[in-house]
Amino acid sequence: MIKSRIDIERIQIREHVESDLAAYHEWQSDPAIASFVSWLPKTFAESEADLRDAIAQQHAKQRSKYFFAVVDMCSNEIVGEVGFTVIKEGVGDCGWFILKRFWGRGFATQAAQLMIAVAFAQAGLQRLEASCVHQNIASKRVMEKCGFRCVAQDEKRLRYALSKDWWNQGHLLNSIGVRG
Image (cartoon, rainbow, N blue to C red; front, side, top):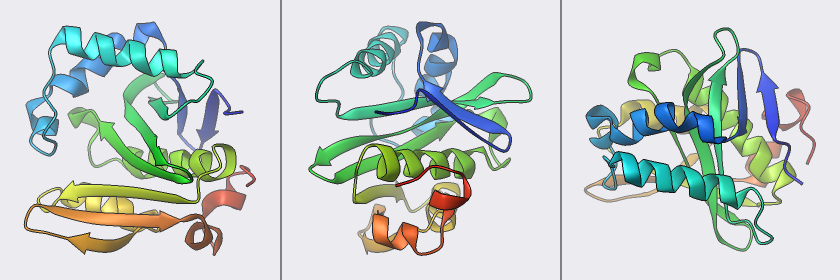
């Protein structure tokens, strides 16, 4: 069972709710964010459909998508999203979006750390994969701070992986109180 909300230091990640739509669409339609991923920007209708899917997944018997709002606990403002999709047994593909006005404040790293703990301790995954375009230095740094290792690269993307074993060898799983 996935906890619906997890807090650490100054942020929380929580399951999405319908009232997240305005913030959700803001990062889904932002050209600065879209410059790093091929499936963005999205229209309002596409964002609304994606958010509804994220909410529906919370109740799925065979849940494969785990996407969470990232909330600044000081302001109670949504600053982005973090999550993962189960791509095969024990393996998930993960990522994060932080609204541009919150870039450079450490929200992505903290949110990714919480998401990793959920993936390994609560969802039972053994490995997470992530990637970014070479130009996305901030996401590269987030992955490295979280313990991901670069496993491949091509002319467009850097590909990273993090195993539960690597994570357990001295990372946050125990220090944030989420047991695996």
